[in-house]
Image (tube, rainbow, N blue to C red; front, top):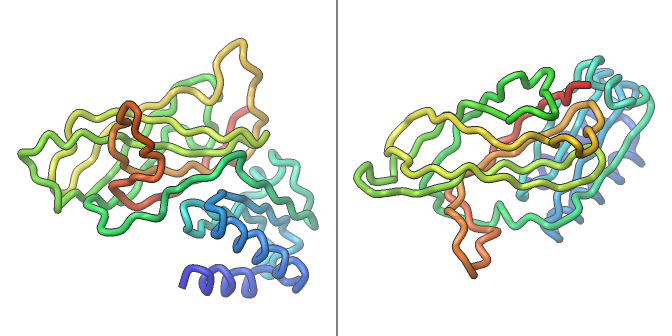
Length: 221
């Protein structure tokens, strides 16, 4: 089903058959190896003349339509396509029977995200299958690949996730701190999920408690 959705999108949005074939090759490889990848398409390559950033992440397919300003920040030419593979595999997307539904998240200053400020956001969730009396220690996990190819996973620990629908406030470390080099400006996809807290000596990289959601931010100059 997921591959069918990706194939249907690329055929309906990308006009050139060789690019369609190239896109599906990257998509199939990402799904096979659990390695995220992204593709940028300039506006002249799309049937609706819009630029796009497309991500294969956690065995899901995410499409972000870019503004002309975001395409310019990425220095994406109108007839250019670009591919980037994540620096490391990601085993999210393999779990079933998830107890929490991540409904949405809203990142502060997403349209011009300061690279050296904490990343703050509001997260809406539905934890109806979680007992309201349990300790329910969880982490909010944020994944992203910087435009230079660096893969980042950050965690914000929660001591209690209430049952039912709710909203929580999260904060993560900046994209970089002085004197680290500033990430290049431009659009970047951010992915969020709920996961168990890390356990010493246990490989829980692929464990998750919720679905994965994605959002687009623009790294400020």
